[in-house]
Amino acid sequence: MNYPLIAAFGEPTERATALALDAADPLAKYKAQFQINDPDMCYLDGNSLGRLPKASITAVNDFLVNEWGRELVDGWAHWIDEAQTVGNLLGRAILGAAEGQTLVQDTTSVNFYQLCVAAIKARPGRKTVIIDASNFPTDRYIIAGIAESMGLNLITLNNDGMGGPGAVEIDSEYEQITLAELEKHLSDDVALVTLQAIHYRSGSRPDIKGITDLVRSYGGLVVWDASHAGGSIDLRFDEWGVDLAVGCTYKYGNSGPGSPAWLYVSKSIQTQLNAPIQGWFANDKQFEMGPFFEPAGHIRRFQIASPSIMGLRAVEASYQMIEEAGMQAISEKAAKGTELILALFDAWLAPLGFTLLTSREPQLRGGHITVGHPDAKKIAAAMRSLTNTIPDYRVPDSIRLAMAPLPTSYVEIWDGLNRMRELVESKRYLDIQDNGSRVT
Image 1 (spheres, one colour):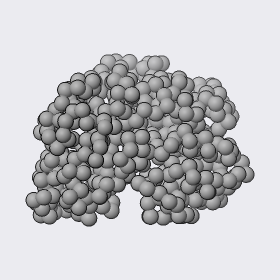
Image 2 (cartoon, rainbow, N blue to C red):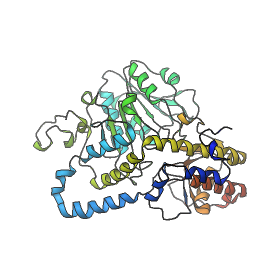
Image 3 (cartoon, rainbow, N blue to C red):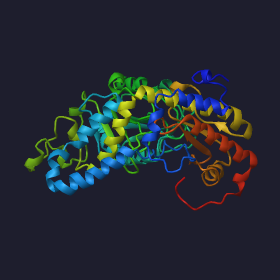
Image 4 (tube, rainbow, N blue to C red):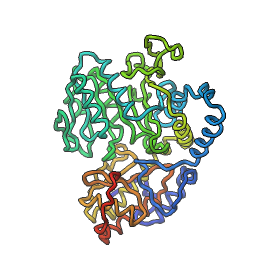
């Protein structure tokens, strides 16, 4: 096998190679900017929950003591528009988006509902919406509910064999949605297509620009869920002509559990869409509190209510770090880190019965690699309890292993995969007991 991104640093199975990668890493300094209580832990789950930036501790404490504590209600004079100003920061840092197109607010689920319904209503007379079977459960459940309530025809592209409402079979490798397979189901009746910018389970990466352009050529809109893409790959929404997208901030964004999510609406279509939940923040003359709703003519027309200022402080602190580091460097490290995982998979895990569920091509993957094994659940649990290595298990038989570029070192990946190999070789994982937790 060839590993062109890391070949110059030595043999992947030698720990010295990982140390050489760290020595040459322009982002290596950022690991010290995170709170790491246990230096021996190999944390390979940054695609689920990022580590805590030290700057976030300072920012949140400062807000509590010096803003909320001192200013009380007068603080709203400068808090009022922070969903927009922090949105501008996030848009610059990870989306390739100019100002006035991104809000940081609410949850990914609420933002997803808002944009999907708005997009469907902006295409009156069209009765078909499309999603894929491997999409994140919340997205699939929400779009199914929307389709049922609005009397729409839902097509589920069966790219993982799990099916779903209106399932249709497609040819797919690593859950990939290709332009050719998607176009078979496009017509002038399709109002909306919604897909993942990085597939949460397989780590597969579609052609975002190509799919957006293709659906637009049929008159439809695409809502992208970039929860596993933002902060791991170099997104260029304005350049690619993306219309609509949502995502979270607690994965590669390192903003904390339950931190505010974001939505993106291109300026080119903002006044063409009306959000279904008409909150008072979206009213053009917000503080007149009049009897009629008149939507703002800019991004605030998609804001429902008061944002979590405490949550925004954590987002702001983390995305300032991301902006400083730069998404080009971050995405390059993600590509190298995942290639190191692939190399160690080939040398260590494949001979132990693991299968690869993510593409080998850097342009077709994100920040995590997914491997399959019949005993994946036991192995993942044993990695946590017996080897001090934190992976991520996904039903029915897969383990996700992530390179979160700012807080993760190459040697952390090497050590974690080495512990995983030794665990499975020794079969110690077979003795693990289910701890009863719903969280995997």
